[in-house]
Length: 313
Image (cartoon, rainbow, N blue to C red; front, side, top):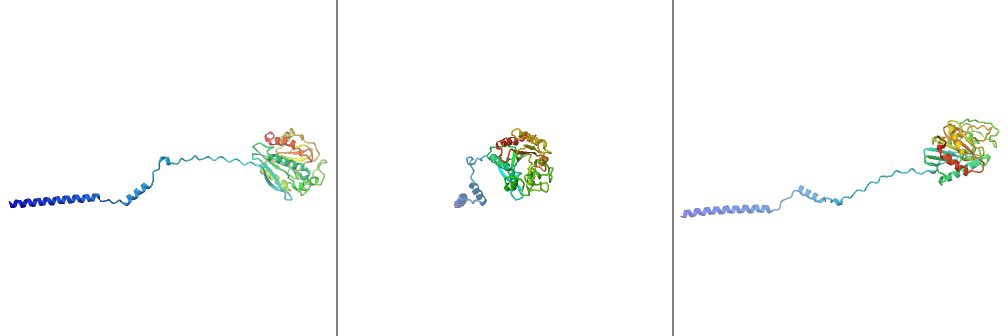
């Protein structure tokens, strides 16, 4: 009996010990589960980065503005631009006024005989003023050049016979490389003063500067104003036909006769003959007197001259 009691005691003791071990293990696992878990540095950085970048809402996106296509810039208007093409013997400037930028280049020339034909310079000034004010206007395809005074030295010397030649005593309308001669004949040639044709063609800076300008700028037609009274002279040579057509068209709107009044004077070294030989339609227009500019008449002349299709075809 006593033996059985001891057996039961040991069995109960073992059971209690096992139960205590089970309870202790349960408590240990519970404590581990409730303890805070460490977070890896890389995961924390990733989490912080993700939360630092906001997700843009569709309404926060800015709508790009349309880009404007730039318009082509317009060609600047040329209305009286002054071009100095050279200098006289006494270093006076030779000024050309430019109007327009068209492909067809035309030219008005005055003052080749300086002060003796001062009314041609006055006419050129009147035309320049009206071109600037748009009282005279040419087609868009025309560039017009106006050389108001080719002989400023003669003009400064005297508004009379002593002002016909340049400062070298050369007639600038006999200094061109077109049938140039040192002497010429004719009882009706100008003879109020002794005058020369220069040492050779283009010996004078004024004629050389103008010739270079005409060729460089590819001038197609020109009017060379003179005075007085004989009418319209057409250049001879390569553009003789076009020169004659221009002279004829001008005669239709003016009292200037074409062909001009007959004369026994021998014309040598003339500008219009040289120009015509270069393919330029060239006309010498003689005003009616040495005093009047014939402005009203020459406004009609300008209308015809600027309409280049009438004579260059």
